[in-house]
Length: 325
Image (tube, helix red, strand yellow):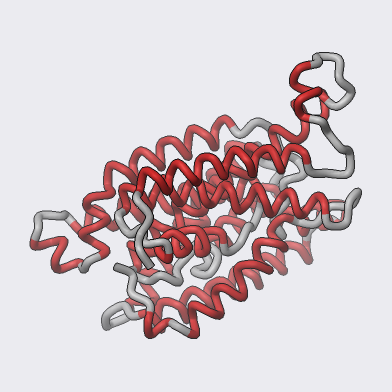
């Protein structure tokens, strides 16, 4: 398949993101005429748009972008196209940290800090256990991530079992990926901007690292320092996404791989493409979550998992034919 030119691809994704945003704002049990609402300050749906749907749509886009960039960074870090924060247990670690903060009655600042600490711990465990006394390989990394994710799942189940009954329903819905309680994600937008700028700055080194650690080191890349920076950045992006929307799975796997299937392998275009495509995917998933059984809502994470599981199984089936670079 011939690769799409980077500028053309980013232009198409930007247009698609605007369309997905409009679809998301229009979706729901209460129909909105966006033209009327924007042009008429007294329109009955204006408050719904500005106070409910717009913050939720922005949260969905930012969450998808954060997870997609984190997925792309983890894939180059581990040199494994099947890596993502959900599969490797990083989201589970972040969720565990966030739930502990919720149970302790901590504020939003402690919530994000606890989620970040859980994400860091999970990534460190993957690195340590997957390496062992030998070298990293795809099978060892995947098995380590799957087992670690299952372990975090057990811890989360324990926390739910000992939580007050009044909190359990909300915690369960949040863990499945919930965007129903969203405010303007200003802190997350800042985190996304910093992460995007940092990833673009590192893009030339990421291209070399994707070609092999020895090759990158021979060309002057400080691979040890680069791995630490990627590790910290991916954990922070994942933790921020978890505090926004709970445990949203597979977006970090789907977006980077879809772009690679289109021929985009240069991280200078892959990173912004991931941000846009991840945001688009979660905007569309959230619109479906609010429309399928309206006026009731599905957890957004359920729909992303329904899309992500078949794709992951397909990639796992073809793992011998997949090359990261």
